[in-house]
Image: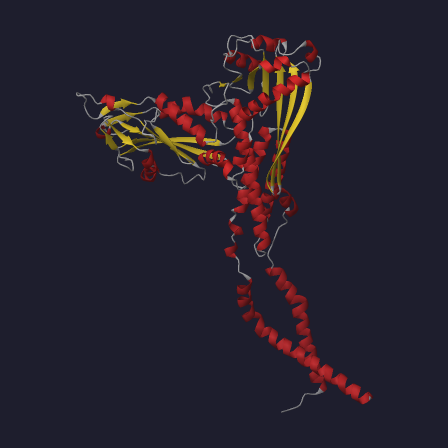
Length: 563
């Protein structure tokens, strides 16, 4: 074997060093750059600020004193403005503040004329024509104790708009100063606000997905569990179930009825969500349970315990709208066949349900429509039956209000609430729903965007594309604007920004590119790269080790020669 000459050894060392230099200076940076995970910038600091949710709900309240409710001495101190704030710490990460800016003034001449109308309903309409209150605000008119607008046993009348009539209580007449009068008036004003504006129970129920509540909140949580979660849109489906077409031929004007009874409500609720309506008729659709015949009533009965088993078999026949991801509200009208008529629903106390209907939380409602009166001894089958749509839609409208989150809790003693009118929804009821939906949207969007930020922080090899970063930034901006508009009392804008926030946050969170299963964990990366780089790196490393060893040997020899 020929020995290496110094020149050849030198040339080999230079070649090894050159290859190592090219790999380290060019290869490693090039490999690092071409294999790095692209992660667009996210507003992490702003997301962390939003995780600590601090909401302030502001409402403008105007208290108007009619003639005869304040003394001349008290009248000199109005107009007057007072601000009241209430702090509620929900948990470590969530806090609420309620701010009421109350303005006190005396009634104008035109308002006095309106308050002299024969009935409270006419006065409410006249006051609304004079000045329409902005969304989220309230006007309370304080009327004399002797006023004939309200019955004797009624102290507060709540109209269809954003106005209320408050009768002066006897203890208020003893107040000599305006401060004493306002002190006596405050509890009554707070009671009106709890009915017509946002309440602690409504707002905490809207935060149910974010906050774990104590047992004391069970009633408000039960109410919130009945209603559908906030959504940009809802699909409403009306279904007519005819179990036996041989018994009767059913005719229902669902299009006209929906336009007359349902559409006014949906039009009024358009700021909250978009709605679409469709209908269908299902033949030979049976209930999932067999009703029991009651000899004492000569009728078939459905027990409250068996109602839960009615929905599943029917639901399989309803179908679904695959083109939409919006929640579906199902309203079913079931017409029993001639052999199971009449059919009634009874409650836990074995009493007939007056509406002969029931609703299922976050699903819809079912009404049983009896037509046994058409089955006379000379009836020819199938019997032609025209369904009374006014009766049916009255039930479905009440169920629709509950499922959309319009609370119908009984008013306090001494309160008289005006009927909703043809729209099926009072202005102040819409405001209450908008307060709840705004808070719910903000809470949901902040939870979604915070969870997304934590996920991206924990899994560093997920690609964050520019469109995802844009959606996250849009959600954060919309959240900040929604919180600011709530604080300013601009309810309509707050709801709009909160809807934009929840849409952007969910679009970013459910983006397909964020599925971490599409990316290899580190141990799988090593399993792929080692077979590629090890055969190349081993000779280079051995050459570098040999060069270093020879260099150390030369230094030792030089040291020995010097010694």
